Image (cartoon, rainbow over all chains, first blue to last red):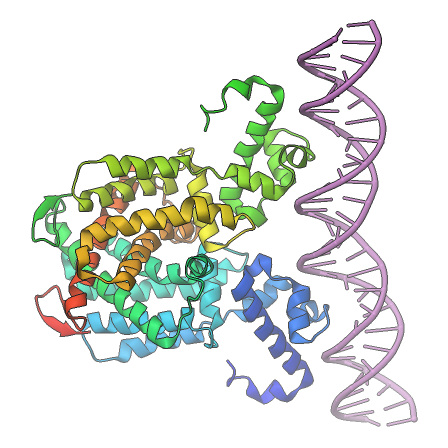
Amino acid sequence: MTGAQAPQLNSASEQTRARLVDAARELFSAHGFQGATVREICRLADANVAAVNYHFGSKDGLLAEAFNFSALKALQKKNATVDACPEIRLHLFVRDFMLMLLDEKNASRQCRMMARELADPTPALDKIFVEAIAPLLDFLSRLVREIVGDRADEAALRRCVYSLLGQCVFYRNSHPVLQRLYPDLHYDVAEIEATARHIARFSIAGMMQAARGELDSRLFETGSGYTREL
Amino acid sequence: MTGAQAPQLNSASEQTRARLVDAARELFSAHGFQGATVREICRLADANVAAVNYHFGSKDGLLAEAFNFSALKALQKKNATVDACPEIRLHLFVRDFMLMLLDEKNASRQCRMMARELADPTPALDKIFVEAIAPLLDFLSRLVREIVGDRADEAALRRCVYSLLGQCVFYRNSHPVLQRLYPDLHYDVAEIEATARHIARFSIAGMMQAARGELDSRLFETGSGYTREL
DNA sequence: TTTACTTTCAAACAAGTGTTTGATATGTTG
DNA sequence: CAACATATCAAACACTTGTTTGAAAGTAAA
């Protein structure tokens, strides 16, 4: 979006609009929709308190404007064009997704906002759901379907998608808590990539198990090679 | 907790205290700490607005009182006494934990509150962390260690715990969103148990892969039996 | 410059927040 | 009963919230 409406960005009005949206993304992603106040956003954007309602009608309108899933869409489109086996494409997706979610330097705070939205819906949930969550779930479902083949039914497939997504968003949502446990915890690129690799490999193994389980849902392989009843 | 301070529960004062705590748990778990208002809690508890501050000092005090991890502790203690292989104990834990998290009829809304806390910390985080989260992470770490053995280092072990926990809390946190996707979604015991079985099997397979990955972190088994580079 | 329009701003608004107050009721003890 | 501490209550308090207002400043065309 930064490139699309660049021509009007010279206008002073468009500049404050852009500053407001930027500040909103910063604070919404940091403190959530309820936690971030209009006054704080305006202070960060160096604008008057009335600016939000003048330019966006309401705080809700600003939230709707602040959401921009171009990065998320681009990620999915890029992934779809990669010529590789679904396992590798899954790993690529998880890697890119985790980089979005965790990299503090990354500009795409929209994904952090979406992770928040998943956990605690706001009035803007409709737009978010239609534009981002549903397509994302659909994208992941197709990808996971490629991996498990036709050995898993719809319910098992859905659960596999949730397992994957749950792992990814956990790192984002639980960051403050985990940081209390490990005060010097920080996610550099290497750490994020290691985490992504773990999630991808962990999940692919889980998916194979889920697919296998459709054939015999009472057996699973343990590490020691035993087969136990579960 | 209901049985421990039963002797004093006859007192009218203790009754309103109990009603307030109960209402608080209901609304905190439903709308979060910020989302639930003191007035709403008091209305639900059929008590005066001033009752919260009179009995608990503040809204924060009520939150601290509302947290009660006896159910979670009992779950862990029960699990530790079970004489079974770690994989089955893991399955049992996930099952009990998911029943706590998802069963609407279940009285242990404290776990739902804790899931919320994990995603969005409140001033009461300290108590919650020390009394519930840290022990829980510790318990899970020991359990997962039993499964992966010494083939996984500390980082891999930690990630396995997060993968497990992330899957569990995802179902709780994302419930409103998933319900939009499947309007007739509801978690009865059968559905919860199926979900728990999925998570347990998915995770055990993932853990075995993570343990295996310590030996050769670049290879994993695909479903078709191929070994690919990841 | 005058005109018309857009954008900014300090100030106020109405509603909601957690909390406090002082009187009133309630129950227990002398 | 009288005295006392406890518990409840309506009302108000101090504060924050999102939002609105009406004047002032800026901007661009006639």
